[in-house]
Image 1: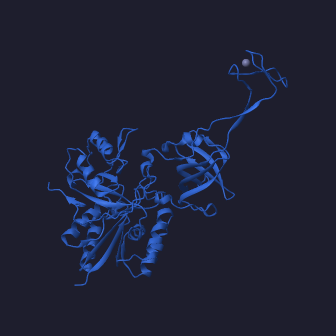
Image 2: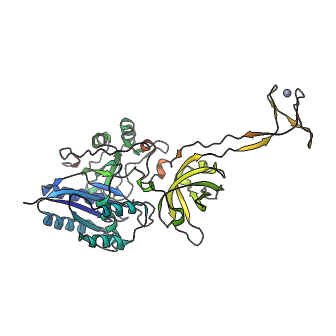
Image 3: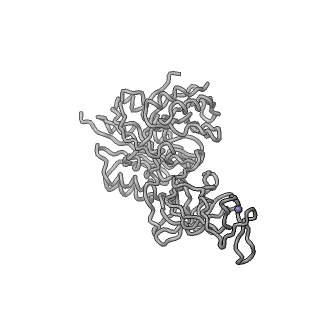
Length: 441
Ligand SMILES: [Zn+2]
């Protein structure tokens, strides 16, 4: 029988009340294992533009690539399971795309890249799918088609992995109990091959979500072996249902790869702007810092929000500093103009800061006193005299470096400090490895 390579993409099956697109992926893989299909790569968990306000749950879609000799049956089964697990009653707008073929069309990759940093019109996904005569399905407003197509089209320049562990059904909605010290220890032992598991500053476990969804915990890192070992170090009384490894763009900062065109900024765009500080920073009552940046003769207001933990650095900026900021464009409202919400701050050049000051007496190491207007200065200890004030440099409190938000303000895509110079391109897929596992409970 003829073998078909089938790319499956789906998105927006979840809602704030439960369910989770990655759990649906786990269920689909479980089903595909029974169908004896051949898996060609890890399932991919692709995060898209985090600055789209109505995609509050992380804007993540899933893609699965398989080889099968019965694509028709497989499609039907996946369709059924997607319908069953999608939380459409609570606002999910699921989308499902099937693309047959080894090579992904370039237009899909381009579309995927756009969805990383722009607001994509719902209709454009549908148009592209129809143009290529591709099988797709959606419910609700069709929002899910963007991620479904994007997950298939995404081409990784850099990737990370996530091991997601799922709870048994009877535990859904109950409190998760994980040994905090085991998470802390796991992080120490696996650094730098895992990231963002434990926040040492706030003493907070970061791998476990709080909500009612099926995820028990998720460990992020660079390679499958480390993650499987890491998960064995997590201690808990709760026995999970199973786990699955995903290849992901989380932690790659890919949404901020492009420099925004300041003359064509659109609401919800993500990217970077390089420019010179044109208005000194001001802290408002809420503790947020606002300043302006001039780039290509255009002035852009930037906001550093208090939870980022880098407002103090923002306050140290002065007019004339050359900086690069990464972030998202907030839509203008009645009370606020269009603003770039800063996700990171990179100092390229610091303006020299000076002030006029009374001269010092080098013999006594003391500052001289003024003798009155235009009368010059005198050391009160030894009587040495100087005519004029001197210009001294005030040390800047900033360094030429990148300032990242604190851990608690990281988005899924935020590139953590330890990954700043890393580009993970190794393909590490071997179907023989336990990248998917269901425990016997
Ligand atoms: Zn003196």
